[in-house]
Amino acid sequence: MRVSAAGPGSAAFLLPEEPVRATNPVEERIVALAEPTAQELGYRLVRVRVSGNRRKRLQIMAERMSDGDMGIDDCTKLSRALSALFDVQDPMPDEYDLEVSSPGIDRPLMRIEDFQRFLGHEAKLETAGMIDGRRRFKGVISAVNGDTVQVKLPDAEVEVSLPFSSLSDARLVLTDRLIAEDLKRSKAAQAALQTED
Image 1 (tube, rainbow, N blue to C red):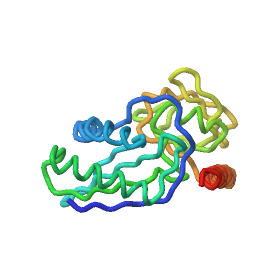
Image 2 (cartoon, one colour):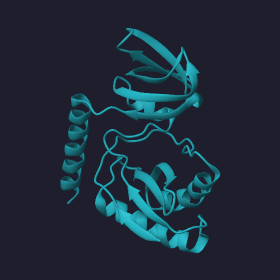
Image 3 (tube, helix red, strand yellow):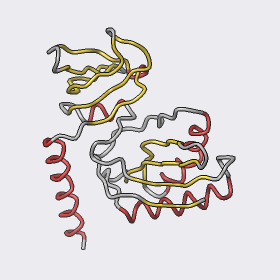
């Protein structure tokens, strides 16, 4: 297994926990193994993905529970802990590369709480089946009602309601507003660190 750490990136503070979405039993097993270790170190798993054909890549996106940030040092710390755990538990049958990274500014939206936190921001969403004659949607997250996400579509000037369980993929769109908010949050976090020193 080869370990690499990617970062830095950012994301806002997460609200109450909901299970990390995985796309297959191998990813579910990895989540079950990795989550307690990550939480013990103060991190929250955002997404786990296994990709590749000949040599697999295990990508784990995470962020600090305290402020949603994830720098290079954080990625390295979590990579080392998970690498030691996986060497013992062996969650995948073949050789693979472990990559621990931040979710980034244009992060995937994996929990219903992610949609609540990013109300008013633009997102790309894809559903597993057809809804209103389409599977791909791009628009502003306008509301979250229970387990339903409402998105205002610019092309039709209408809102579509998408059940959270129907989503196969969702991520924020990189916009000037999202960048400005992330920069503001990052500066506030830096100022808080300086006052602690």
